Image 1 (cartoon, rainbow, N blue to C red):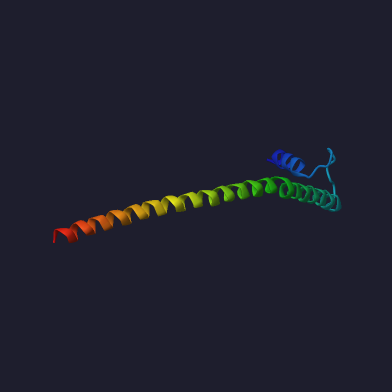
Image 2 (image 1 turned 90 degrees about the horizontal axis):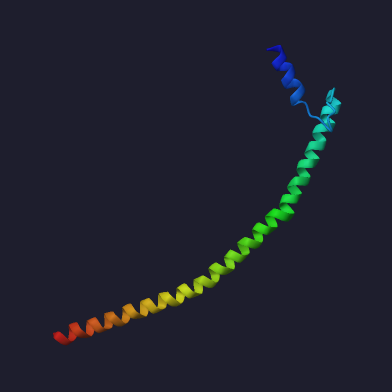
Length: 97
């Protein structure tokens, strides 16, 4: 059990280029470096990856808008056809009476 604890302590320590921090100050400096690295990675994600996603979303939005106009035309054709059939049906019903 003691060997496992020592193994975890050695492997869980922050290392910078193979150097194991020995006191709290070195651990804090190491963690600060890791935080700066994470901030850099977040900036890269924001500037590159999220920009690409925004471009794709904008493209899809434009496609949906164009499709919406076509759907409106089809809707009006169907509505006009139903109205015309209803008028013909009413004429036949009124003509029979």
